[in-house]
Length: 385
Ligand SMILES: [Zn+2]
Image (cartoon, rainbow, N blue to C red):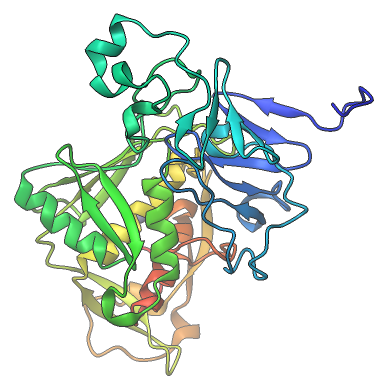
């Protein structure tokens, strides 16, 4: 409400903050920081699109990092229209004093300290950390990467967040190498296998990996847990399933996280690709494990948002009629004859797969396997098999 008592905005709250009439839908990460605001979807189903209204980046203590020139803020100036009060930890941000208020205390991002002493100081402080017992203004044991304090009373660990690599140290390190190929930001892994994303570096021979960066950022910043397991000779090289069986509700943001299984020694699958010079199809073996990982991460990211398209071959639900190239039906016969019209077939294929590869109309800014292939200079997949 404003000073005259008129309602000037409404907020919808679910598990966390979900939507405001004036500021759009809130996308939050594992620590409940508002990382993006997006518009309502325009259009229906696969042809719908959303607009990113604003993106937020914070340092670990909550100081905003994106008051500089970038694609979302081309002038690099603080944006007067960006009056959204919910920022770091989804708390109400007071522009004038640069603080957020929790139920019990105010927190100052500049100093990384509470501005009032701990109202709940007691033996638990002594037990949980010498930091909190000695300093009544310390914020989450000075480690906001791991701890949250939603009320201003005591440090808690967020339940689900980010990306975890499973297996031995050797397996995890191999996974990390493949993941690192997808992004310009330095990835590190902690003792529990949790992956963090550091500063931008000129990884990958100076290529700008826009879609890989976005994909890794959204997986690592997710409030849901995605994990990756290695399994030798895993069918198809990789697979993904929602973490909590069937609880994801499409379109609501109520997701479940995901479990990815990947064969790190994958020898490749025969795919149809598009020759960019002729626009014609050809078959080849693809043994790029990082692309396979990217494909499964795209599924996982959608599962986490509760946006998975469930496909049912018998009812046709979630399936789409898709022009299949002639060589699908001629597979195994080499060399092929180029006569696409003659052999054209239209078959039902799962929409979730076509969206993941990028064979349907996917809004700009959203990662697909083919967009990631393009930024790595690899040929584009022509269809799902
Ligand atoms: Zn897939």
